[in-house]
Image (cartoon, rainbow, N blue to C red; front, side, top):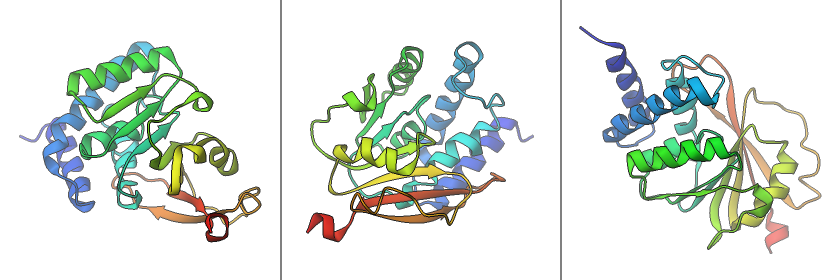
Length: 215
C-alpha cells in the first residue's frame, strides 16, 4: 500500500530528476519538511500548514530555481524558514549557502535544521541584510518575495561579485517596466519556472550589472 510519505518522496524524486539533482537527498528534504511542519505549529514560520502542500509550495518551488543559478556561493536574503536556501543547500551540498534572517525564532529553527541534518555548507547570518558581511563575494543573491526589484538590487548587489546575479523569486510574470534598474546600470531578464504540482505562476527576475556598468 502506498503511503502519503511514499507519495511525497516520489514527488520530490521526480522533481530532482527533472532538474538533474541527486534523488539520494530526498530523505533529508523530507526531514526538513517534517521539522518545518512541527515547529510551525508553535512558531508560525509559514502560512502553509499542510505538510503535503509544503512539497510543491516550499520544497519544489525552491528547487525549481537551481537550473538558473550560477555555480558558486549563494546568499539567501530574508530566508525566513530557510526558503529557498535550505532546500538548495540540501540538494547541492557542494554549494556554500548563507542564510540571512534577523528574526530570533526563525534563526533558532534554522540552526536546529542545520544541526539535525549536519549541513556543513550552510552559514547563518542572524542580522538585517544591511549588516551582512561576507568573507568573499557570492555568485548570486536570492530572495523569495522580499521587496521590489530595484530595492532588492540596492540591498543585495554589494554581496555579489562583478559578474554575480541578484535573483528575485516572483509569482505571475509581468510585462511592466521595472523602474530604477536601468538608471542603476542593471540589466534584468524574466525567466518562467515550472513547479511540478503547483497550480500557480512562478518566475524569476535575474538582475546583473550591465556591460556598460562593468566595462
